[in-house]
Structure formats: structure tokens, C-alpha cells
Length: 439
Image (cartoon, rainbow, N blue to C red; front, side):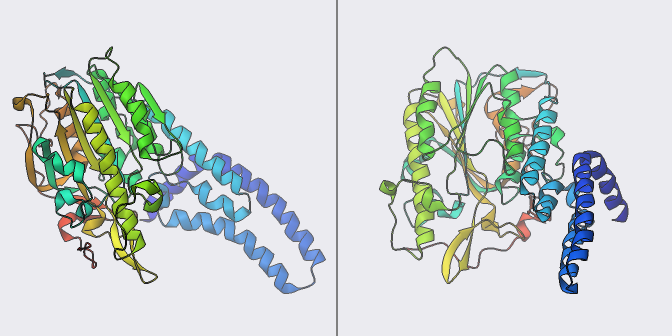
């Protein structure tokens, strides 16, 4: 452990030279201030307070190094230390500096593949990445409230994953792993270049990324690196998830493009769920708590958006994959039922997610997979599922992780990571103490 932390400290000196220089400059100024203050102040207590303030800054940096934080993905030491100097703007600059370096590094590491494409009788592929949707709260999976009426009607056109499990309980840790060959056991950013967007582009698909989530901030830089691989990418601000639809429809109706991959990244049911749908879409009221009502309404609104997408795809040779990035856990907060991320030591519900593939009626029956996959399925394998679903094959490489592949081999162990980087066997996770709502 000591060797590891020493190595991290050395890496820190190389990566954060700009922070070190500024800190030395600030310390020099503060030493002068301490000396001047000590001459002016007569009260010993005030002198001690000033000294403690200065000492706290390097101690905070050493604390983060001692905890091994430097090895954690997307951790930025400057972001943690600068606020203790009172110069919060430098924390923002430090984060931006790190984010830009990540984007630049991944952009220079695009994987080149040897591919071939088989005919699937499908021209348009749509991936909808949901947000914070608990599988247990979809009527598709037996929930007592009718939260997914549009999806429920499409059951004959669906291939449903009954036990899909996210690799982590937060978006940043999930989406990069789900869309690339990166895993919770191999978290290097070098894996991000090997992603489904790059694969589709090299296989001859026109690729699009439409998002209602942020482009560059401390929560989603790794996701942005994958989005940037798309030929067309847009981040829409304002409004609700349905504001993506006009742009989606325009792309869909561009007949000059033969093969398309369109990825929609929505806000879904992220906290605060009450703000994720218009007031006119409030369906559920007077349940166990206002938070739960809002949460179920947000699921219902996502279902409405998916219903509209189905209607626009129905006349085309199209297929859609929907999954949520992670789930939510139910807890009691201030005496009320609350839905929240299960960040540390998650419950099963914190990572249990809905997932299904939908097929347009225009896709021939022999080119569809419909029915159910009943076993536990890690969405971390969606990277392999997606390119197999699209008819893309890597030459001289068997795809053993796609359930659609004849070479599929189910994983014996399904692993989940929490935000403290603890890794668990999914089967060992506890369940929520509070069960789903019953009418």
C-alpha cells in the first residue's frame, strides 16, 4: 500500500505541476501574511487559527494521496485542494484542465478494426440510454402502477431482459463501460476509444449522438469522449426529454443515409424526478410519498417518449435498444419515502435496470429476436450485444458475450462496483428494506 501511494505521489508531481507552482506562490504570500498578522495580532488564539488554516491546505492534499484517491477515475486533486485556499475558481480551472486532457488522450487512441458486416434486414438502429430507472417500477416487469403502457403494448415485438444488472450505481461509472470495451476490472481510459460508436462508423453506419445530459463537467467527461466519436453530436439544453424528438425525426427521415446508428441519452428519472416531466404529464398522485409519485410519473413520461419513437420507426426497417444506466434504492428520509442513488454498498435495486430490444413490424420475422432472456445479465456486456445486434463482426474474433450470438457463453459471476471502488458479487447484494408500491 505504501509503495502504491508513493507511486501516486510521484505521478501527482508530474500531472499537477501547475497546481504545485501556484500553491508554492500562495504559500509564500501566506507566510508573509502570517508574519504580518503575528506582529499585528496580540491574541494568541487568532494567531493559532491563521496557522491552522495554512496547515490545513497541504494536509488536505496529503490526506487525498494517503487514501489512494489519485488512482480513482476522474478524481482531480486540485478540485479538492483549491477551495481550502479560498480560490474556488482555480478548482474549476483544474477540473477543466484534466477534462480536456482526457478528451485529447482518447481522441488520439481511436481503435482501428478488421470488420465485416452481415445483412440484418435493419437499416436504422436506435439506442436510448435511460437514467435512474428502477426495473421494479416498470409495469412491463409487473409493477402495480401502469407506468409503461406504450412499452407493454409492444410485448410481441420485444426481446426483454428480465434481470439486467448495471455495473455501478452512478451514470459516470456505467455509460463508458456499457458502450466500450472498458470494464470495472480494467478502467483505463485507453479502452474508451474501443466503443460502439467507433465500431459502427468504421462498419459504414452514419452515427448520431443526441443528449439531454451535460457535455463537459466533472460527471460526464468520460461519456463525452465516446459521444465525440459520432459524426453528428448535439447536446440540447432546456425543456424536457421530448425536446430531442424533433431533431431525432429529422435525422430519421434523411433518406440520403442508408445505415444509421442514433443514440439518445435522456434525463429520464434522475433526481429530482419532479422536474423531469411537464405538469400536464402528472398521472400518479396521492401515493406513499410525493417523491414516489414524481418518480413513477417520470417513468411514465419516458414511456410516452418511447411510444412516440416506436410510432416513427414502425414504417421503417428499424430496431431500438433501451436500457437504463442504473437503478435507484428506496429509503426513508425525514420520515418520507425517497428514491436515491445507492452509491456505497448498493442494494440490488440500485443496479437492477430495465432493458429490451424492440423490432419494427417491417423487420422480417427471421431477423428478429423476441421473447425473454431470463438469466442475470450484466449491461457491461452491451458493448458486445450492440455491435452483434447491428450485424458487425470482428474478423477472427468470437463474440462470446452477446446473448444474440451463437458463440454466447453466460458469465458465471456478475460483478458490481460502488462509488468507493469496492467490487461485489451481484448475488451477494442485499435487497431494499422497503418494497415497491402496491395499489
